[in-house]
Image (cartoon, rainbow, N blue to C red; front, side):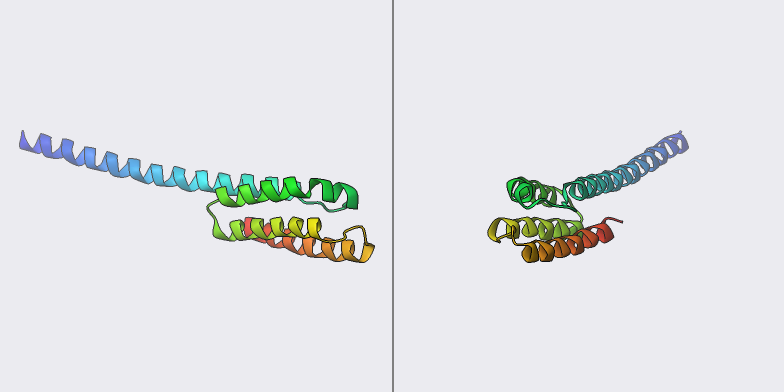
Length: 122
């Protein structure tokens, strides 16, 4: 009889241990999904061929959304890349982006930031 209780207790322990491992795996997958979602959305927000007027008009919304994504993602490298991209759109609001030289430099910096995001998202 004692052997039966011992076996049942051992089975319960193994079951609970297995559940915690499954929970841990699910948490990791959920974190990855969050990272993937944040990366995909941030890449979709990037302006690769910007029109200076549209760029300035949309910059505030992009800053807000990129910072929101950065706040909600757990991966610190992705978080940093998202905040850096957001800072780039803050620059757009402050600079005279209509000047082609300024626009060209901003596009170049934005592409570098986007490449950094791409690297940390892989």
